Image (tube, rainbow, N blue to C red):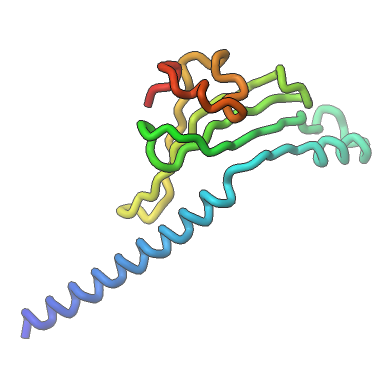
Length: 139
């Protein structure tokens, strides 16, 4: 009887784990389809000025690009990230390599953020991915 109970319990636990993994896979693929893109708070900045929000409370204009790149050393799901300020592409304040992966043990999506060694040589790597092939980027 104990053997039958143990087998049934094991089958239920295995099935539940498989269902959780399937949900995580679905969510992960949806996130990876939605995440890449260009994000900008131009409307927020515009309306704060139009509504005469106190200058000390106004947001600075930021613009980010999240572009998928092929860097197998970092994993399968990798994005190049570049952000600039004040509607000026020369005012780059952030360059990163984001590597995403599902973590089935924790039921979560993991993000590892890599900071390139030589950011100057990677400017606009989303437009010229060949810039990412050199030693300036290492996992």
